[in-house]
Image (tube, rainbow, N blue to C red):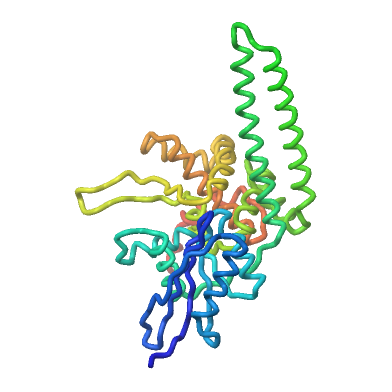
Length: 348
């Protein structure tokens, strides 16, 4: 009888359901998807899932739960597993989607996704997830709430503009619009105050160093740290751009099929949104980024491609500064280029 070396439960997380598959790898390195189940994404459903897992897994063999980082829906179950003392790995969505392309899956369903996640966990050595600093979770909630308030205020301002432009404007409507704008301004101010009160000294120091980059403000730096849990799951620049959905996606097959390169947008929308205005500022005031933008626009005539390229460069720079715990060096690119064009010394 073959011996089981590893057990993995792959979880496809949705808003209302947890679709799970139990996979096993044996001592001959063969893989078997042993069981499948569907549970509600509620406290009772999570408890039922653990009872199910306890019955069908071998206690003496290591068990790992693996799931994708899917917005906020996976978070409750991740915290639940951690509180119960179970081992867990959370994988970036692009890793699972790239892995699924290597499998012979003709129809993508919740079940096939959970099986793919289980297989991925069995084949790879994954880093175990640890509870993030509660500060990052609070910062994410506050920054997203602020974003909703800003969006709501923009709608009300547009409504106010339309109403005041009418031939016979309704004074009561104008009054209510102004009152609502004042309320939203007050709520935004409260959130900004809470954001400053939540941050500890270490996070404040990191943000201070990040904001030495021209065009990157405190709010942008806060959003990036909040959305990445302090770059917790990020191991390199490529992973970060993929997580943000700023990675380039190309479709090319032989000589007959060739699609235009475009960003995947399969990532964190909040990060992409946060990087937009800093990129515009960098293009306007930073010669290095101005040159990158001008080169790309002159090449393809599409301004948005140049802006996205600068967003990606800025995002990578923020990550480097955070990881190296340093500040922005305006002469870095210049020094780098000077090193590249130094003449090779002749041998005597």
